[in-house]
Length: 242
Image (cartoon, rainbow, N blue to C red; front, side):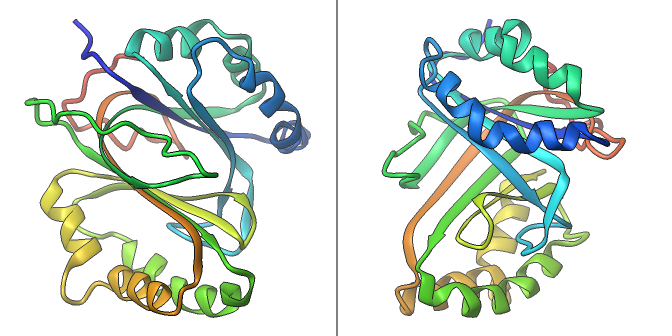
């Protein structure tokens, strides 16, 4: 029995050769198709950054797609039966998808709240965090000078299962998506006394450097596939709903 309520589907795709140009083109041609897709509540076609966390260097081998649905059934129907996902699977060399239940959200994305906060499920699921920021032009260079340290601090961080930088437009619209084994590990990284992440956020807010920001937390209730040859959740007892 699937849990009721809104879910998000985050998919990351790896491409090779000329298929990378097809993936890049989807940033322009896919949104008009998704805007009229039945039941779809919110979506973003995303590029990714090199390495962990934020990066000013794009990764042209990897692209992302975030979709938000009113139910698990709607998300799984899109994942398994839509022409959109069929085309991605045909072109991609590898893909990794996670099904996410929103449990906390504040802020907006393109003027949209995007995610509906729902009760925490009792099962011990991994947690995922999505942070997204739109920078004011005058703050772009100071921001990027600081985030390198934040990205490096994520490498091999205890309790972190996965981390990836995402974005709609290089430098200006940036997001990070990460998966954590526990709430304690996630909060220690984000809000601990020596957290570079917390320091960067505080400085940016003090200087009024954000045009828009969003923070969302999820339970990971399903997954499928691999990214760079591995499934980050392979050792975690998370249902393979996908």
